[in-house]
Image 1 (cartoon, rainbow, N blue to C red):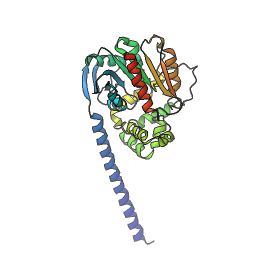
Image 2: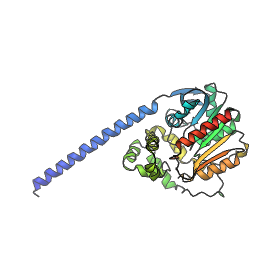
Image 3: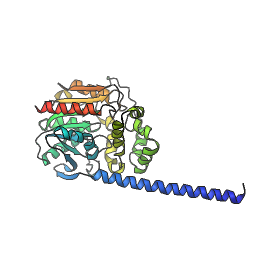
Length: 324
């Protein structure tokens, strides 16, 4: 090939790469703007004795405080609980400390977050409510039942991050400090997370959402759409980074709770193949809370793929039974 031809080809390739980079940048900026607008929809900031808390509400009937999981906010909580609105449930989905518009205080422990849950119920004029904690949200939901039992009519813990003694077998791998650091870098950057969504979705499902990607691929179209919504709602991850940093290390900081002192009707749900190892801890938690019921699945991962409708039906039945 002649030198002039080589230069021409090189110039064309360089121009194509630049154009592709510009197009990718434009798509990233557009997607991030859409995600930010979506995360702000429907919520209000309520002043409470414990500080401002972001809340979204829907429905009327049995009050349910929806405590979202890692990577969430009021939007993730409402996405999980909105179907319950049609079943006569008043959903109160809040953003935990460090998520979206709820600031992170100096003390962001599950105990302090539980007190903030009670402050929110005060601000809303609700003497009691059922409480549903998902994943990392289960820690403060449990503490609310322990610290303010008169405020809780029923407790539901779905794939909860919870303590268990070392004598309880658990097959889930533990993240090293280096893996934690890598995960925190990913979960602190909108650009990195956006790129992972598009080029490494399967590893993202397996390692960040602790759910086997092959189960998602084999699930119904409705379930795949639900999982996609969960994953994509993590953007903008930068607006959730403070809460994510706390949640990423939550399991290593948790100690034993006075489970035998819980006097609230409790339902605990998990799947054995949850990559975060919640099954053993959930089973142990249910075994120690008087009268608690444990609902376990063999497969489904942390997102309970294939069991979404069944879990919601069980939750509604539990709320109605405890209300009676």
